[in-house]
Image 1 (cartoon, rainbow, N blue to C red):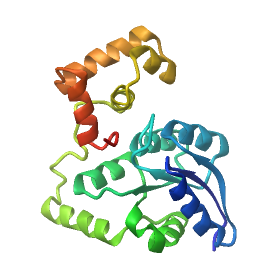
Image 2 (cartoon, rainbow, N blue to C red; image 1 turned 30 degrees about the vertical axis):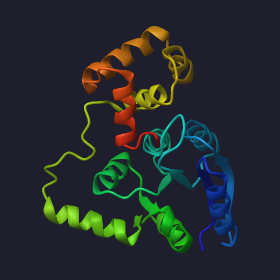
Image 3 (cartoon, rainbow, N blue to C red; image 1 turned 60 degrees about the vertical axis):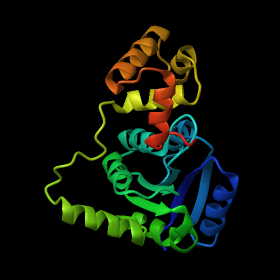
Length: 216
């Protein structure tokens, strides 16, 4: 079994403990750090350079998709395994578009997590069987890829700001979290409201929940 340094990011302690317990039984594997939100996951990944990052899809401050994009932009050699309770063809397309190489349902993690991590470490992709079937069915229906994967009028940075706003952060808090000026944050917010067609913050929150950017 190939040695591996693994970073776990999930806001539920019981999930992190479960993953760490499975990893501990694999010779040469070690959990080098744990994160409870996506922003900390990115910071730890950039500092520690793990071989594999296990990311929960829905985390506070920065969701798994946004975290995956940021990690892979800085560490293209890293392997990303998305762990989630959600299953949908659209979501799988978004995960692939973000650059993640694996997708495991939390309900299947007890029996498939080690196999998924082994696959990623060997340079292969891994999808829970049900999700893999979904990917194949989607390709058979649309082999040309005519549908845009995860089509959205908002950029990655704008989606990041949507999450912060939907979590109740003020424009000033958004600016502080992202290291930008309040004026820039206000501009982003205005553009988001316009491009997303949101008439109120409540509509933005509903959009964030519907697109699994945050959990209700």
